Image (cartoon, rainbow, N blue to C red; front, side, top):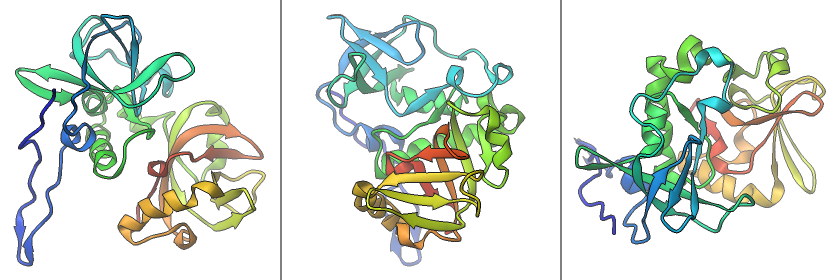
Length: 265
């Protein structure tokens, strides 16, 4: 059993009283996990195998090999294939029979989340799939440290990974890749099945973000943490992350609410 006690970084007391704890990624994402399984890292960057042959895939990240041009890729500084860890399974196997999991590693007698190490080294980016609330915030902060330091995929200002919605032509070589986009939502649209976030006036050339109307409540719940809702997003400066499709201009389908963050609160 992994018991994570006293691992939170506590906020300082303010004049108005004691602030809520600000958890680090390990307790926020893993909590008290009794189902951890001993695993060995396989040659593929985010795959792990247990003694019974079950394969586990590290969740909520995209590795450097999937991101940007080759010139921003660099070798991991701390790990090689074959190191040991513990997988905390998060659900049934995917279509490739891999179990999504948080991966916990021992660093000098202290447990750390392997996903966080990848983000901090700039060897992967946060790709929301399972993380919620404080967990997602902690993973995004870990990525931000590498971004500010300009390491790994963030060298050369994240060339091939970070885009501006105001430059739709820059997406011409990005189709099929996972990217992070920042820009201002110009208008909103909606049909019976789809919600549209329009980043320009010309839908055949400008960036569009979409989500299913059946997912609106989940997105509104997450946006509500900062006092927002989908209906409030016109004119807001936001960040989207996801795979770019070429569909009447660049298009990103949002399937997890943490793929959308309002930046101008």
